[in-house]
Image 1 (cartoon, rainbow over the protein chains, first blue to last red):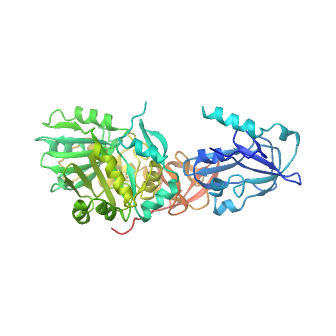
Image 2 (image 1 turned 135 degrees about the vertical axis):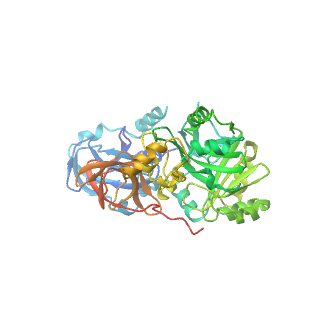
Image 3 (image 1 turned 135 degrees about the horizontal axis):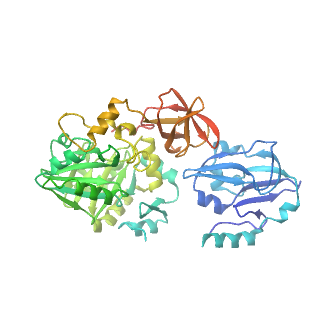
Length: 131
Length: 357
């Protein structure tokens, strides 16, 4: 069974968002998403400093099987990307909610956060998605 | 309903991720495709390839019929126990299939063909051999497994002591039969190894005994990255009925000599040869991070000259590799990946050479 940590927010496109104490957010893909994709071999991450809108395609991650788009859950400015993925993209598989994070951003609109799914909603959504 | 091989229960017991391949439910991987790939390059892995078609051609005209049907010349098989790789063409020279021919006995040959093309091949062979006295026998009660890797022959020999001596003595592109077992030193990974055909009821015990010797179960995912590293074409992807073998890096499978051997597609192949082998299939290594995929455009100076036919990440080289069909010869190409141009280097095939045989 794929893990869905209670403290995170989620999208229907299988990204997660963690709000840090300073108000910035960390974004990655869910355990379910990494399991569906298979072993990652490359992550094409956004440029730091770029401003993006919610639902924009911000990165492409490539597994042995196929390429897959990652959509930004929120609008805002990219503050940092996970440089460790350059050498070890498989961190996304082994630790999707920890060392396998993708990028950090400064969210432009706090209201957008409340539109995301909570862990319960995402779990239900995932079950329906699988049927 | 997809078809299932006799090894299907073993795949499920190993928690394989299954996929539909040419109408068969087959294992994609058993947990880690990359780990399975490395097992074959470094040690030994076993693949279920029972979905492939096995067709025996027997009768007085068996050799003559195959000389007419196939691009390679079965006359090269001088004694039973030898194997040959060849293409099967339509009259326009388009590749209907690529296959292995095994010379079992005078007047008996065995063809191993692709899963997706088995029925098409049977119909084609039947239709085009009416003037020959042969019997075409699809062998549907047989299972086939590939045991591949530098340790493969040693491990199979340990699992089956009675077979050990002939397995160690077996030369590449040769085979032998022991009772109902058919054991060939052939494969699709670029490594040493065996392809084994057994009656359906023997497949599970064979697989289990190999596993007990440390042979690692491998799925079609690893099979695909291994064959691509080895520079082997995948039928339906790197070639199909729209191209000749000469446009598919398979000119070596077309035996133009002797010049009086008439085979289906000969005229088209001679024409392609005279026109200089273009377009052609080449190997590319991506010089930057990224992964190239099938159908991405291949460019010279920003102009499209072809496309990727197979592209993946090479677990051995840790770089993206591709087969691409191009209509222009150049020292440098680039691949258009999502609108960005990535430089790629032309590389002689194979990308990865197996352990010394």
